[in-house]
Length: 232
Image (spheres, rainbow, N blue to C red):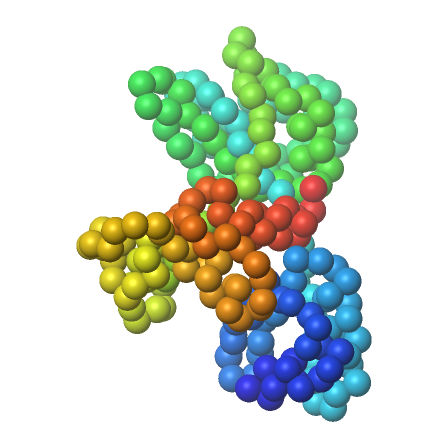
């Protein structure tokens, strides 16, 4: 609470508009901004306050998705196949250790799957330059992979409902305390995230959409934050 108090009492910090804040424990507050200047200003001001420590989270590693990999190619051997069939990658000193498997997704009505890996900046840039890799006689498309995870219980981003700690459901259509599936309110929808942001951080988002709308201003801002905090 003393951190929150400092944010609001300090005149210099009052002008800052964080994307969101979250208490990690009784002594730690995570504060997210959409721009680097605000982060630097916050750290500078808090450095003048006794018993305050600040740190900046490291940027996340980029993810890539290999689209349309034939089912006969096993996940365990995919990277080996790719490096063997694309010598230009090994010429750049790219190895199997540069890939961390995340998940695969089966394509409906097709004997193919998509495979997602986390990698480093050098490998990411090399694959984005190629945009396609060969696996035997098959040409595989390579795309950036950014996922926006949203909880359908509390409507916040960064986790799913299975891991949500919220005690009540919030309707994505009317902001009421009930499941979206049981909403009976008619008329124009209201986005809960944009509404809260407008009230708490004095933003001016249009709220006339559902909280799961893909063009939601708050969701677009969150996607921008993820993009800016990835080591492309």
